Image (tube, rainbow, N blue to C red):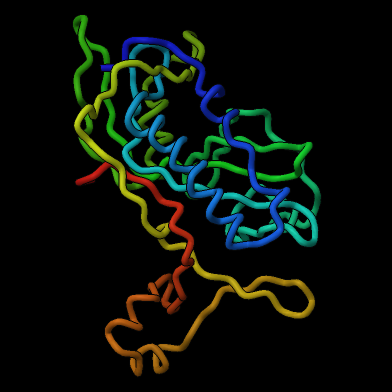
Length: 239
């Protein structure tokens, strides 16, 4: 059970990005180690607490990383970037929440190094404080957009709304984390004009692929899209 307040920013501040590295493979290798360090702290050692009466325990998080500028490492699916918005955006302060149509991100951007970084809370569990103890209300939520309801529903505005990170004794002392590809994130290709588009094939082309080749694609809104190869999704084992 979480029992000690701490600052999540100290965990996120350890992330340094990879803007100084030129080789893309080396960039990705260094990102893996940095993401894993954050994932272990977030998934195995803490929770978000709302007004002292509700707790959200992350069970799966998904990282996003994008370097602004022409030659940086790009993550076209990421929302809060100049490439996505078509204009330069302000950099969020460390540990800010970014709420969007896919759910809620915790951000750790860096204006000096000009990168955007965040993790999406993909899956989580919910507890509420009742009669002097924390009671589990939801063991496992896999829909990331439900987090708005689970965090803030039935919180009186007269009390104000406070969200803070609590860390301490882990709620998963014997658990490990696993890494896999991000969920429903497409691979992108860049054309000669610098524009990114999703890698897509027709249903007819998909049907001609072998079973192994078909596993490299996913269906979304009636389209067959190639999966992004970046394994930036981390989850508690068995979730």
